[in-house]
Image (tube, rainbow, N blue to C red; front, side):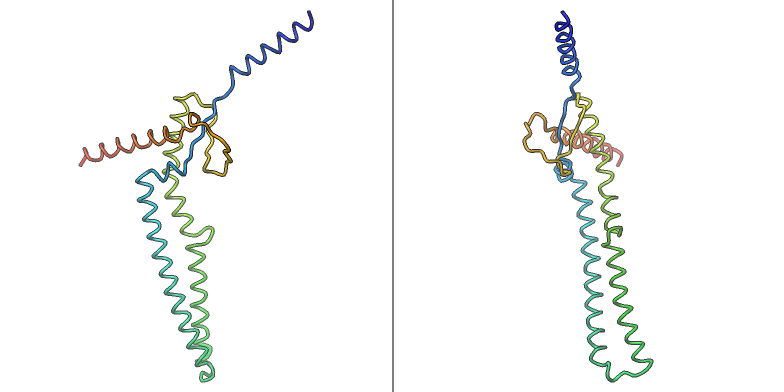
Length: 183
């Protein structure tokens, strides 16, 4: 009788744990971002700005190389204040290049800030769409396979990427219709 109670308790525990099991879904936010036309437009603007900054840096680098070369060639002819002035000019240009590179392309530079400002609104939209989709489908856990989570095998029925994308694109269409009707 004692064994029966233990087995019965164990079976009840298993049934309870199975009934409370969480459903898990997977989405690919990188795929979703690349399917959003507004994100592509914003990314194109960012890339255009990056290209502009890179060409400015190349121009500064070219100017530096010319001045440094001219200074090296004329160094023997320069004396006193002229030598110091030209040397300072070349060193200042080199500092300017390094400072500009760090300010624009460094780890906490303008590009990093622009990129996070670009992505943040889309991440918020994706988060809201994932929340809506997970509530509709009764999911307790949603994983993002684009953030270095190794998904070795995934049945299509557990991949909710397209459902999230549908929610986002429907929201975009509604916003476009609203904006057009206001004009």
